[in-house]
Image 1 (cartoon, rainbow, N blue to C red):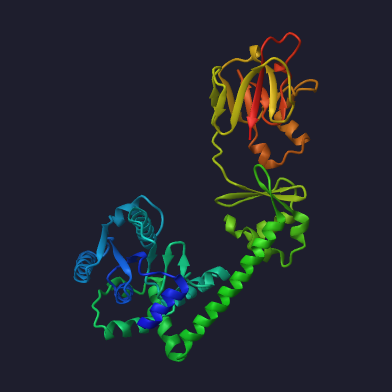
Image 2 (image 1 turned 180 degrees about the vertical axis):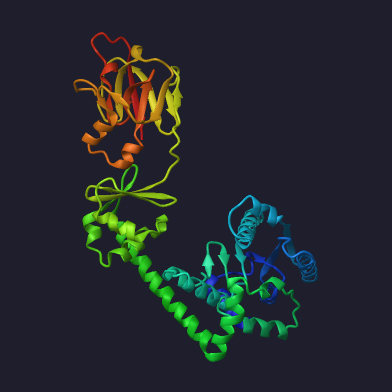
Length: 435
């Protein structure tokens, strides 16, 4: 196993003996074998151990063992205690998920502070099988069935090609000592139930099962790579970036078959899960919206508009008379000029003496109206934007520059007649929105 491990490290990860490696070390069989393999191979490692205080004296016993092991091997050890139960009281999720979050946040902190190149975890082939079966029971898609990635950023998992039996055989051959976690025997947890009741049956019934399973995972990963390539190609051709959203042609989407599968492929990364609803959006009326935790998808005539959700809290930004340059949610330059010069949607000219300070920059609100420059009478801002065929996302994100409650400028669109420059204007204020 040692030679196979060394060849795998070199071929798959190109890790050198000069690289500083951090090994996640619980003191159990898997992490003990991983640490020992690294030491036998001459790698430059340090250990990181978490004590979650979930198993009383057993947790403290693990910590004592880890400290002794590190001292005997002359390996640097990072050790951290967590009050996991207290943390859970203030957070949602299972105790296992809370512990996992705490663990990886701390690992990331150490990696940055100590400049480690990689974090090594001891996941092995049996872990991949257990994860596959768990995701299979949850009707997971292809991605959920492709197992645990060998590399994820700075995290590498060099034991994935090896089974639990191979780890046990290596540990016995090297007379390694390790700790047993009694909670791993509790089959009330789904993973433990699969580990103790299902996996042994599969292995005993089909002697070559693990080899066949690993080959199947490879095939699934190759299929996943093909889908990823297809997704990137389609997104590059269909997704058109605009100022506040991404525009996608409904006509082009409707050509893709099967529709739901392609909608899943193109939009899953944006957090959507209700695929019947997302697919129905292709034939919905203008204005229909589907929302995930992170994004909004809007039907806008012959297009879908995809935009990231932002904080919708109404915040007013005050701009004082002395300001020549304002840098808030947008950059604005204020300058006195002798005459009207360039005209552009990002430029407005107003009579400065008609303004009341501070000016207020805010998002549009229900009932807002103004007197559009070049038009007669007043008009609701919402009606003006509709007539201009402004899409739903841009409507929602429209900024208004106001003076004493009156709209001075629909930023980037139209100034208000009430503040226009006339023959009697003494001070012409040029306002430039610098996108």
